[in-house]
Length: 328
Image (cartoon, rainbow, N blue to C red):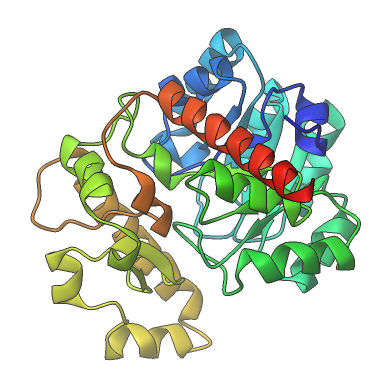
């Protein structure tokens, strides 16, 4: 494998982050990722309380064979943010990925502890902003990402960020094969953040129905909805999603445009949406709202994380060889 900022900074074998996935990521997945030569990241919100989060991060510190990260939602929808930052400052994970807000406080308090701060960005303007605040790297969230996707394809976004800011760029979205990983590195990315292909794994703690959906559905079945968190989010287009629609209704739309009520409406939408996703992830329900990205196209069975990593690397090496053969 090539040496990149990601592999050199964190001393990992392959330039891959197992992306943080709301409700899907768990400690077992992160620990297994560390055994496979990559590193994983888990949302702090995957623990119901700050107390459980502290217990979880202590376990990761003890059992991970390599680096691990914590994902923090850094806007007002995250009512536990202050305590989560306190815990991250105390236990100093190897890296923190910040999403959906300003990383200023996280950088101020956690960077001095040796934690690398990597920020989700969807455009150059925000990349420059987090660079000015002292971020260590950015994750280019492109239009192929699962969850809160960006508007721009990786083929445009990665070179744009490389040219316009001085931070290492990691690409997130649409990577489900080794050839896609090769293409991403060729664009200038220092690594890839890969999430959706790891939904259908034996280590994942979600329901068998959710895992099987990631196998049975494909790229054409992924739709954007603003009814989950108030921000466009990718989900599998199940019959229930088709029934409720992907656009906010009149009342939701009105409240989100009202200057006085907008903040509270967004918080309510986010809370209701996350609860519906949580219910679908862990129990049988007809209200199936499953988050996923188009790269589930390449999930063909439920399998261990190690098999997915081995396949990605084998495909990557084949792509490298094919490219080298063509250059001769």
